[in-house]
Image (cartoon, rainbow, N blue to C red; front, side, top):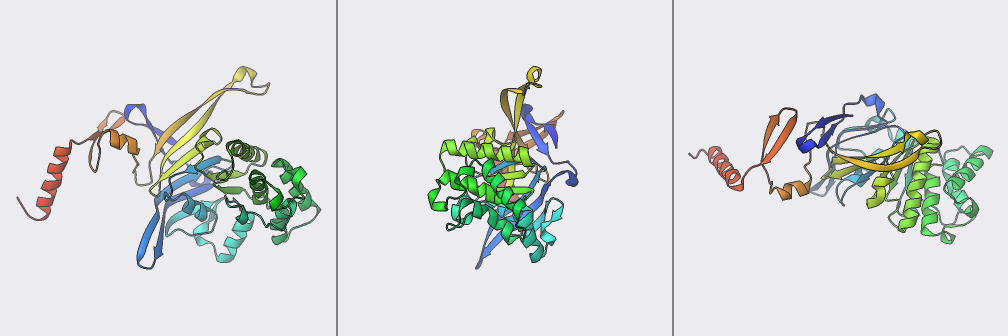
Length: 331
C-alpha cells in the first residue's frame, strides 16, 4: 500500500502491493442484476485487497453493493466482469464442484438471520458438529474441536441447549462456532450484531479479534454498527458499488511496558480516500455540498499536491451551453 499526499495534507491510498501478498484480491469487479428488461448495477468496478489474517469491516448504505461483494467472496454469486481471488484461487474459473468444496472448506459464514446458521431441532454442539459430518470427517478429534469452539465463544456450558433455549446473543455466538467448524481460513460475517444489544455486540466483536489472534483466520464483517471502527484493523466504505474510503486503526503502546504486557495508551484512526484501478476517487459528499460542487471542477498540480477547485456556477453553465452549441454546430 502506497500513500500519496493530497490537498490540505489529506492522504490517498493506492493499491500497489503484488497480488500474491494479498489473501483476497478484487480487481475491477462489476455485478449487474437483470430482471425482465430492467438492469441494476450493484458493483461498478470495485477494487479491494485484504491481507491474510486481517480483521476488517465493510460498511455502506443499503444498496451500496456490500452484500453483493460478500456473496461473491463466499462463492454464492459470480461477478459480471472483473477478477476475484481468495487464497490464490480464481473464483471465476472454478467449476460448480470446485465451488462446493470452496464453500465447505475455505470460507465460513455467519448470517444475521439465525435460521440460516442453525437447525432448531439440534443442540448447540450438534449444530457445530454438523458441517464436519457433512464434509465426511467426524470422529474424536472433530468432537473435541466442536467443544473447543463452544468454549472459545463462551458457551461450553450451553452445549446441550437447543435454539429455543438460547438468547439471541448466544445463538449468534454458536453461529460463529459453526462458521469455524471446518477450520476455514476465511470467515465472512454479514451483520453479525444486527439483532443484539450494544453489550452483546461488543462481546461478539471481541470474539472475532480473539479468533483472528488465536487461529489466524481472515475475517471480513459487513455491518452498520458505528462502533466497529474501534474493534477492527480496517474499515472500508463502499458507495455506489465502489470502494470510496478506508479507515485504518492505529494503537499507541507504551514501549517501556511492552515486555510486561504492552499497555495501550490510546488509539487513532486514519481515513484515506481510495483510488481505483483507473485513478478515480470518490470525493466525500459533505465536501461536495460544502463547496457547492456539482459536475465539473478545476484540477491543478502544485508541487506534490493535486488541487481540486470548484467552478463558479455561472462559469459552469456557460461552459455547458458552449459545449451544446458546438455539438449542434451553433456559433
